Length: 142
Ligand code: UDP
Ligand code: MG
Image (cartoon, rainbow, N blue to C red; front, side):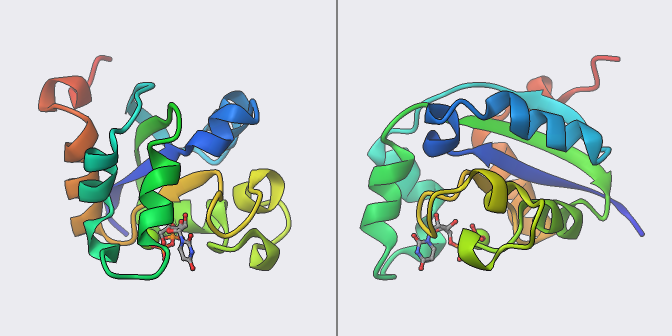
């Protein structure tokens, strides 16, 4: 299997509930390499662009409002099979359907405010990491 990159975002609810550290602990326990991270706040416009694939869906406006409602923590991750691995670690979109021990089961409130983001493909992961991080910010600092 190939080394891949994925984008995690600790969403505004995850920041508000004081779970930045707990979520980063999961990332490290699961063996992901943290390439870069920051705390930032999306404007509505930027949130709309980030989630433009969902434009027109009934939850889109609420999602954009939520994602711009407070600071979030984007984290660029690398691991073998990272896309599927990170989605396994975070669990189903709706925490009610997420497996025990997953980040969303542990820390998410509901299907909208669900603590974390994960890219759904290698291609989208590249776009999403590039949305938040410059090449220099991703450069190996080791
Ligand atoms: N979302 C929502 N209601 C829905 C589906 C999605 O509020 O019925 C929100 C939720 O925050 C989710 C995001 O929109 O994480 C993106 O949806 P997607 O289906 O891509 O879920 P994910 O990939 O995040 O599991
Ligand atoms: Mg998705």
